[in-house]
Length: 250
Image (cartoon, rainbow, N blue to C red):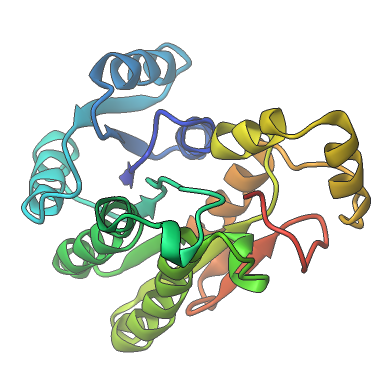
């Protein structure tokens, strides 16, 4: 049984489809978009999967326990957690950042991941082990100006992943991060749309693969990290970015 946060976004939807195809029941979690979460859960069910939609505000520290309770009541337990929910504020330097904006990004991107991981550990332990996948970002490889809030939170997610993995590995709980590069979905598609054709051409020329990735390519790696094939893989940050080590999708 898997929980996927940020499930209604482009990457989140692809992850949900991939995990149900692998045979997992999925709790489709959204922050506020209940109608979108319901539609996705219905799509997954119609295609032969097992899914349930639930929305709550992850900036509330109590929400993580609520999510775990709903998953347990609906499916009998929790085996996999994919922390995919995130927001960004691109282009704002440290001096320009309002504290409210800073807190919004840190609450969703980092604090909610901590809350979800903390709430998940007892549930995974009760099942004899499991896996957590935290979605970070390729931005941690470049840390460009104008990305203070987003880059700080995603770097924090990677650090949290590595620390937690060492604390729970002996219990059969694996914790890994996945850092997407430019992905033509969700926030990545928004970044593509904001660029001129000339800017986009230059950007793609900086990526060895010469193209953006797609959500399915991220979902496939998440599926692997959740699978028995990754049973000896923990504490890692897998960068899926077409070879790009210098850019971000900001």
